[in-house]
Amino acid sequence: MVVAEANSGRAVYWGTGRRKSAVARVRLVPGSGQLIVNGKPGDLYFQFNANYLGVIKAPLETLGLENEYDILVKAEGGGLTGQADSVRLGIARALCQLDPENRPPLKVEGYLTRDPRSKERKKYGLHKARKAPQYSKR
Image (tube, rainbow, N blue to C red):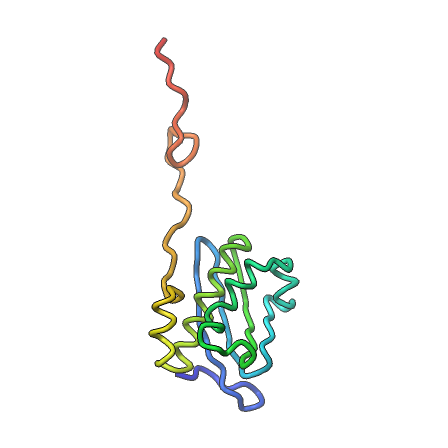
């Protein structure tokens, strides 16, 4: 499903990714393979970290589309690791919109699975979510 048409008449595909408290709204636009996150080049935003950039590009590499689409991202919340994983999920979901036949290879690699782990809330009477005060017998 094409959600919108860009000004130049090109198709735009959307995907939303989440991990921990990070949310990434991803747009795939036909282009040269640029990654732009919050108005900055992706490698600058993710501090030239090869691990983060590898995680983000993985769905495109699986399908062989590395230089076919520009990736425009609005990332909020969390840290860089959570944002990188949320961008990966958003890209994978957008690729499923692009062509339903992209879904099986992405599913096998685990790129369409949302990581449900998030920080557990702090309970009253405890220091953290589970850390209790030191026990004193007397």
